[in-house]
Image (cartoon, rainbow, N blue to C red):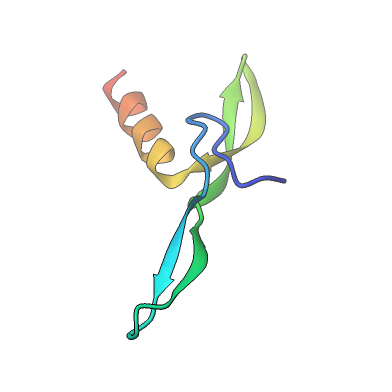
Length: 64
């Protein structure tokens, strides 16, 4: 299972760790994925969603 948000398509970012001597080693910043049960086409379905997308969905549901 890849670390991708099923709604926004957000993926892990990559970059470097930097030590005190400025040596670079590769690292990843993973997406904060949460497994949530959402209504998809009128049926409950488990979806892996980023925390940011989940917050957005909650505020949109409140406004509607």
